Length: 101
Image (cartoon, rainbow, N blue to C red):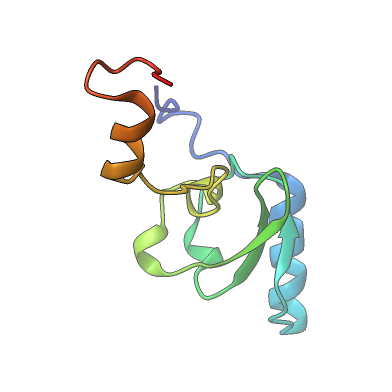
């Protein structure tokens, strides 16, 4: 469910203060944040963020096509290890789909 239009996009206040400070100083080092739910705004374009995914901070470079999305969408929380190989699956589970020894 999306956020109400009359409320406007959600952006973390502390994160916006960090962005304003970095732009004022001209500092382009990555900004560390835990605010995955913050919506990306036009002020963030061209900046780097270190977004926490539950284990570590992943670097995200914001580009124009990301505006309107959330920061958390670009820092994956789950690691995809791939699908099982056909031979391994058939040896363990057989044709019935149940575990066979």
